Length: 454
Image 1: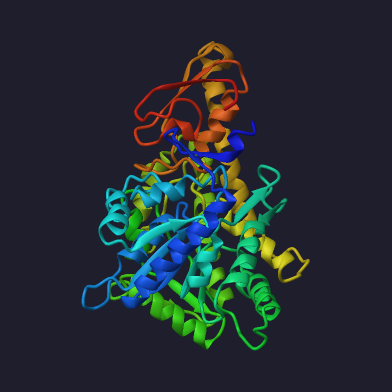
Image 2: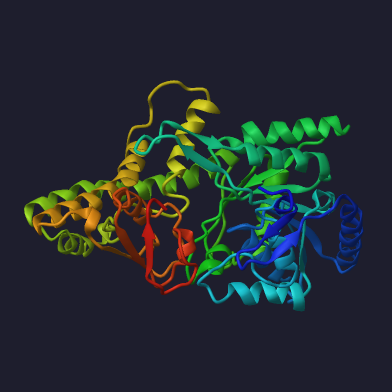
């Protein structure tokens, strides 16, 4: 990267923002401090949302848009993002009242605009010093699972480095009475085995030897699409705290910012229970999808209409949620969450036996079933007397879910990658997905041609 590019952060629309200089930090701290003092005079809690990406940006908006029983804003939110070349642009975007995430939900843009420009209950910053002002810190820092081999999820690891670094900074900055709510989907045991020791050591280093970190966990259930905001604000939540005080604080906080009257909280005893809940929830769904894969192949080979079979079964109430499998499951959570559980069992808990079989097998099946459509295309062309390298192939639909412009881990990506191993033209079309997420033109509703591996 040229030196000049290292000092700017380009936004998706091409606008570049100068990264903050050392002299900017003092000025930013004065701005935040003054804002916090003003908001406290109005009786509002200061909430710092750490990470304003796919989940954090909208969570910040939901909290900033909440109100007390009299209808008055009760929270002031500071969205905090590390000033990197990849992500810094989100800060000036937010401070203009522009959502830093694209969404099909028409509520996202008005939510951010309203909180920033009208209610003035939301701002964004690059300064970690904002943490020292917080009554509550909501952690929405990404925790990935890196798969080293396609089709063998056990050969992978949880990438918790960014989360650990964030927790270290939090421990260095926050007041010991601040609630730290981890919203990120993490390996079971992370709050107790990773986060607690980090914060406890940081407190002791600062002289707070008797202070117990007020840690809590409540995973998000964000659903991309037209119900993006509602999936955060108007949906059932599970939460837990590392001790009684943390548990009471997280229940109070979530009850004040979410629609708990219609969607009551489920309060568990320990964070590891809340963490396990999210992993089991998504592993179960992945397993049911993987189960139908072999039956779809059976049906294909024997002339059975599997769609009719599934519809006939779904009439039975106990089987009404049966889902017909496509070429992969896609999305950010289902392809990885089971891997987080397997990794935690061996790495955090220290067990070395081969306990998990169904969970990793399900992920492996879902990850590799997208390899079958290219084989079917090859065979079909061969039956027509044609070969793939000189054929035009249209892939219709590239997002993993209907009416959602989200291509993360989409099975269509594997299909395209496999097909373009041959030097031919492939064409993809999607009504909702920006093609830049796969490669090529960034406009929607456009037929894009790709040559070579994307």
